[in-house]
Length: 110
Length: 110
Image (tube, rainbow over the protein chains, first blue to last red):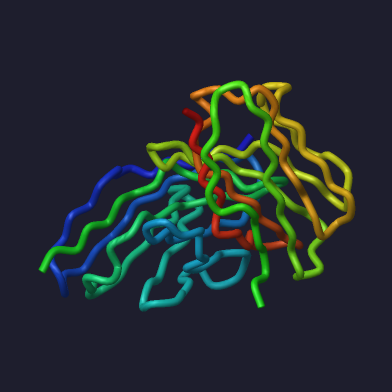
């Protein structure tokens, strides 16, 4: 069965600083990988996805992620964050169904 | 036009009561899910239906019963509510890639 580990439960950063949210997955088969964002009191919104092809995936709001098969990682990055990026971020892996990591709370401070 | 809609958005009820949450998707997807998000934001898969048939039934108490009258609808009925059922319940639909989520239904059991 597949599983996902998000290595940081909370990441505080200052505005305009770069950020990386780490995600590792475990699976014995090829999977699809996703990052979702959840703003307070809202549902989950897709940031980006890796299905196949280029290992560097660009998403909405300036985020990107790199699929690394040898390290079984799918870390999310943004070169310069804004206050409005403050939210909960979820990494997810899909084979037959979608499994989520525990989430990383990104807090952007002025 | 909302792709995945859930009703009601908020439910406050007493222990022991029975309640239902409805979900509808207009995306033409074959597969729908229910997820439970606890107070620590952890997302746990509960059920998955594919074209009205139950595919996944995780370790969920029998008090929870999903029903899919057609592939565009997946409802969740909960009997004999307990304090621990308090959570946000998310409905989602998918075809082959990412999940599309509803806005969530916040259930509070007093």
